[in-house]
Length: 214
Ligand code: AMP
Image (cartoon, rainbow, N blue to C red; front, side, top):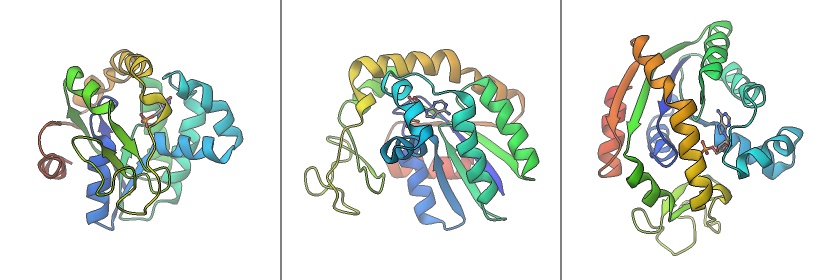
């Protein structure tokens, strides 16, 4: 099993791109730490109860909590598959944990692909973002509207706005990204694993550039 790490600010389009690539290739799976955590919160698990307040404040949840969830997914991934890891690692300590988890599982990190999007574009993307709570499909009121207003094209569920997508929390999430996650760009660059893809323009073109880079 090999892993492609998705790097990029909140709202850079990691989830959208990963979902497209995974939908077109059955050997590729999309694992999003944010989706795993939101699922745990929705199900009221112990991990979810612990994560909830950090997530609502736009802060990172404790490393061990999220690392455990990711390790479980890596352990159960079929041989020969590719995992698009979206949202993990989020800081240098998590990158160390990932290296260890990957080694123990006999897997490898194939590349780390940065979706490069300027902060001012990010703010506009997050304002207007809609998510399907059931199948996790993502939409945007202007850039990627659903066919029927407020309803998921794929499963028909009522679309929601993520609690942490309000302007105040987005500011905190971007600050956390720049201070804690951005150093990973340097780390994976030094390891010879970094690829950078411009994250602006039509989604299909971004996904194509991502596919070529990964
Ligand atoms: P995301 O959907 O990736 O934007 O993540 C939403 C929220 O979940 C983040 O703001 C964090 O509170 C939490 N989260 C997701 N992934 C991680 C991670 N790798 N480490 C710590 N917290 C995370």
